Image 1 (spheres, rainbow, N blue to C red):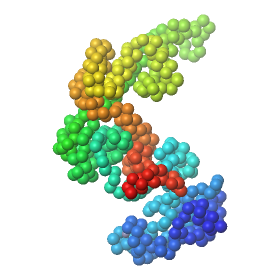
Image 2 (image 1 turned 180 degrees about the vertical axis):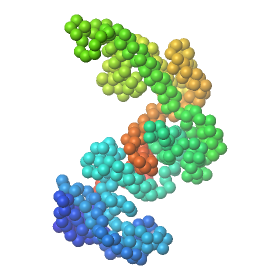
Image 3 (image 1 turned 90 degrees about the vertical axis):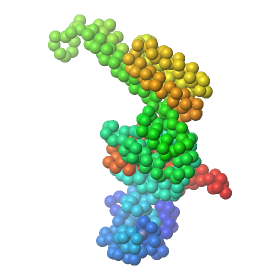
Image 4 (image 1 turned 45 degrees about the vertical axis):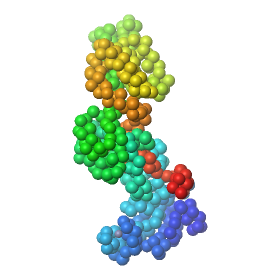
Length: 449
Ligand SMILES: [Zn+2]
């Protein structure tokens, strides 16, 4: 029986002492092998006994079929000459964790592939515990990877993203070549960016060829000083987000106008409540109401890339097209600007951008005219981005993934946990499912050999 349990719970260096049922859960009493007892949880060295915990401690383990399962053990406290007094390390769990290593790896893997609320329900844990689990798993993965995170960086992107309803900022750094997040930190500004650059070696900083960022001048100056071989280009993602914001502004304005028109066309009623007989809304007013509703619900259909639209969103876009208003014109201008970044050469990009600038300056849509000015000002930077092959699609994909993840972890009280979630989901250091061979590990070993 003990051997079956050791296998089912995949326990190593552990002895099973007993088994019982407590309040519908399976509780397995365990203790570490003698050589794995009295170890410092930080350095792993064998330490002198300090005292024993008064109460046994429980760790949530992987469920055994439908039943929840806990490991129970009364750990000692040990005194490490270097790290002081701590609860001893146990082979089945990470330091300070209340769940086993396997359980945490499983939760972290699920969080990368699903929503936090679904994971919390499936794993029968609190929504808030997911953050702490992500943090411990990520720290472990990073420690296992060592210094390799910044190896071979050539083209990077620096961006800020906000969380807590735009009250707090995060600085994120992405690797354009691998298409993944490599660094994230709370705050924004010179000091934070300097922290990132401090983590790179001198050689790594010198190896950076291209840095993309928004239009902020201080980034340009800082990058020039610390990465002497790097060229700076405008991040295509920002240019597209300018036009998307303008498009949304046009949509909101048209919606207000349509709403007002629908209200004016509706018959005035003297008394509130259901319309009296012969007092129904005329067809004309109904049509105006519908038009206002279409504009209201068209936000995602307008902003999303046409290739990603759902069938309903395609219909919405068609309705906007049929209405033939300024809104559709603004949408066309957005698509034309996006096309600039898909050009195969700088020459094509320049021709497309010139045509766009001409159209945009004549379109008589104030929001687009404002973007036109900004784009004209950054024209050379935009062409440079195309010339250097910074594909907007890739930058957009990783930025969207970051935004979605920040929204997911919105309720996390601890920013470090949010950053760990971001790194797990968006970096290339992904958690593994417990008990499965790690994907790509064999190839990696072969390559190294
Ligand atoms: Zn120690």
